[in-house]
Length: 350
Image (tube, rainbow, N blue to C red; front, side, top):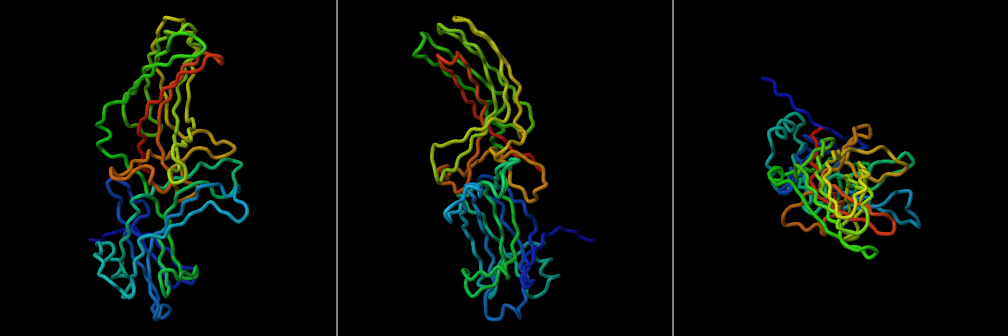
């Protein structure tokens, strides 16, 4: 019986080091992240009395390249989970695929296992606008194999690196949660009485391009007419390590209903919204799931689900959430009533 398996290969510029990975997509289950398994092959005549290392790099771009000035750049790179493969310091428990690779590649092929950092975010990237130039805000991971006298002795000529993705998976327990709902009552300075909004969704988890049914009840106990009722899907994103409580909200889809609700009246409405990638704008605003190829289809960034022991404020990278936002509009002189109903957006398998 012939067993076929796929591997991904990348050699250093001088072809003295080659890295092999069994896959390039790794699932973040919130409780743990899949281990990175691979093999590094090197030329012993080139290595001589130096060492061979493998390590994971986390590249976080937290600003646009075209906004960099005065020699300051918006990139932070962390090199984590560095392992010395040769001379070997410890025995690595190899998987079946790794053992098969080593048998094919020879005596100077060594297996390795790497772990993703617990406090880092999944692979996210900002959607590119048609006027954007250069890299945008994103989180990327790469696996590197290299030769050096120490783990800090890195020469680009003998570095073999492959970009990998950390993909967020929605925990199965989230699908069993009750459908979210909420309500808000607001009084106004410029008119008497209050306006109440009650809203509910039909599920706690949705997939991209899936219909989101929103039931809304609005009660007008104010002395002024409620002119419009708006509903939209918003993506809420923030960079916790730099600014807490500074959340960017970007609209994915919206609906607008002219209701002209008189004082003392109430009405029920139902909206059908969809969380989908919006049309491209001049500059990027929406976060997408990270891509290995630029020509790959755009997918919305799934909701960030952290380990129960990890605080959102400690995350290195980008935190993404979603909500349905309901707004009752009384007019420019009186104000609005706004209610957010959060939900989880699950990633769709590619």
